[in-house]
Image (tube, rainbow, N blue to C red; front, side, top):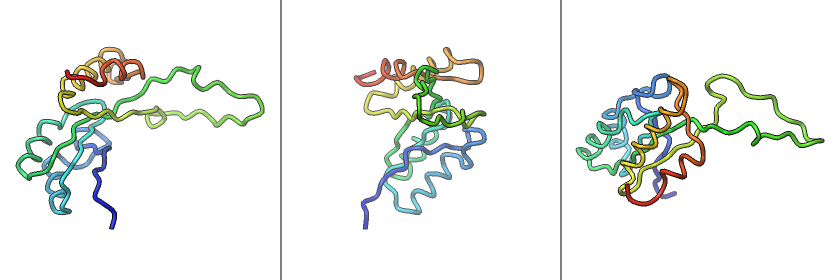
Length: 142
């Protein structure tokens, strides 16, 4: 039997169109399955993080907190190579590249700042981060 593992890309109902259950329901189901770790990585924000941490504490489950953000990849990153067929560009909200960032130890404050920066730099309602921005807020104590 394989050792248990946590799914790291879990959205709550606070992630409109991407999650269906509220943090308490996610924790209840994880508890039913005997999980000892549960992540919550809402899309573009930390909307359910506090309720998730509280529900996990009450159930004796270790919470993993994070966020799923759109990654702003420059067009130059997709330079066509002569002789190699280039796939058709993706379009729509599902076409964007995304990155899941997790908080570790004192990383909660850095995660909060990263989400704030994403909302400050992206278009209204469409927060984005660059690899450089993620790197600037990664590592070390908050």
